Length: 269
Ligand code: SAH
Image (cartoon, rainbow, N blue to C red; front, side, top):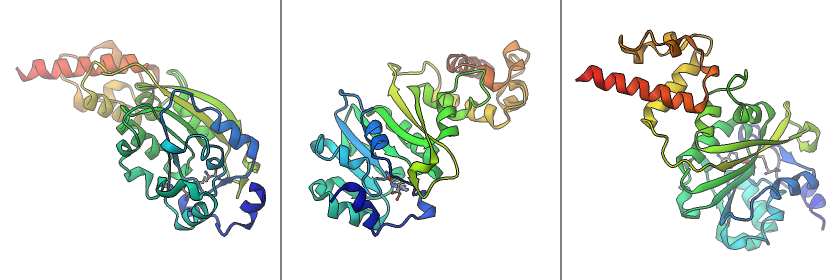
């Protein structure tokens, strides 16, 4: 039976709460899988659904290929159609999974992600940035644009800065809603992220995250206003605080973090 026929006969019915939009175009599915780089040592697929991406990976990279899917019906379907996956098919929540069990380094994460939790998926990737060398994923188009946006752009925000600090991000291509069942209300896009060479940001990384979040949560305000609670009198007049968060590159956020932490330690003396 052709994959297309199998998918139509599937018992699996879309569940809104799980963000299920099944890709029906085989060529696009293949094109997504083809983005994986040859140097990855293990691959974890998030949310395989009826296996439209899985089918192109299952025979190629079986030793180190894992699937995490939360939905029981999808799991049953995948067990039936891809029995060789065996215990590499895991029913569970990707957001709670311990990714270190799937490889120590050069791991790739791939998927047509459930859009309602895509930012959380990226935060989970960040948590395992020492292992995860690459992410190839379909997300809502706006999310893809935000991830890849550079400073000065309207879509540049928290995820752009926090992810770009560790990953080089490319917007690969846009995907029309009519190649999904059911069609989502939004357009989709595929992005690819590759781990950069940074091993240490060169600043207090916790404070960096706090500053980026706090600045963008009030993105129309100047940094002087949005970051006021973090600024000591010795630095508050510094010109950089006249800027708004979308004007700062990742590097400038790092410098800003160092400026704030050095003034805080000076004040403590
Ligand atoms: N890859 C398939 C399905 C995409 S829809 C295709 O392209 O057709 C998103 C899938 O993610 C669904 O199968 C849904 O059940 C699954 N999913 C949703 N939340 C999840 C989570 N927290 N962990 C793992 N899988 C999840």
